[in-house]
Picture 1 (cartoon, one colour):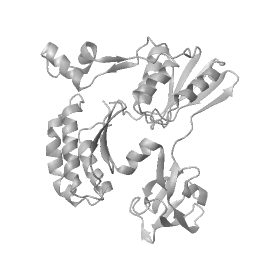
Picture 2 (cartoon, one colour; picture 1 turned 90 degrees about the horizontal axis):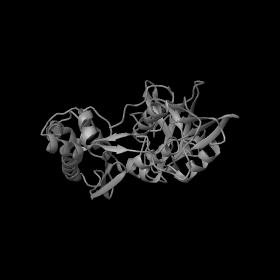
Picture 3 (cartoon, one colour; picture 1 turned 90 degrees about the vertical axis):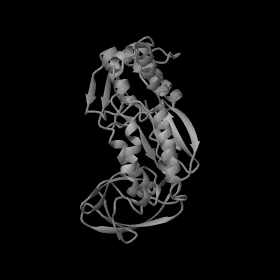
Picture 4 (cartoon, helix red, strand yellow; picture 1 turned 120 degrees about the horizontal axis):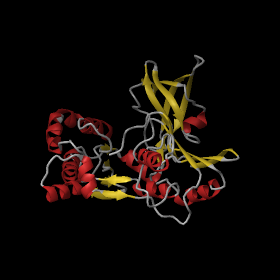
Length: 350
């Protein structure tokens, strides 16, 4: 079960298997007392929908109470979600998170306002590990390996001071790998974070399909066009590196272009399936496999007008491959004997 709580300026959104269930809420930035409202709604949704084998969700109120002081001291959305997500991490699983309005907007639109860098804290400041093409940072000449040492004249504290409203400016002092420093004045603006999926030919017989996400940016028509072209070859590499997953409907679509529609992708077990199992068997704490066999919902590839690829399939994964990507990689390995190559994936299927 995939659950994301988005703390939006207008609503809180629960996402489960790609379905959004909106409920009204406010941001902490504009209405500090909204924290209680958000926590109450989270408690309601967790009680109704959350299901993870072995997780005792009745502990949630106690985990929140233990962080009462930190929650009261949180003055903005960023600090509030840090505290709340810290409590959620105590359950030891992925997918159930509280997100800021900026995160939710980014997921919904494929756009973000800012300067366009991915970074991590190091001893000297903030190390840039990626710049988004055509975003303010890359246009100004910032590159991976540069280190931000000052933000608006202040020492670096994580990413504090770098995010901001569209049209506003941020002044950065940057240390380049050659030891020289340079000042940059960047204007924050909206930019696309969607990386285009691609099909490239490695040789005359081998094509590589790169799919970056199964979320809203997934373009089914484009992928089908790629697969029509790939059908001319004998081998297909499905590159799912850094694909963090997304909607099960998109997972099923791509699976249907790679494997027969009667081959199972897996079995979905949620709270309703667990309750149905308990009602039918009167057995509490049964192994998940038993629940899956009796009341789980089998997932199959979507039946498409384009036949599945007939040649050899290989899958690439890395530590950024999660959720739907891991489900697809496992299904292709089990059903097509497709080799899965790369690094250990995220382990973020829930």
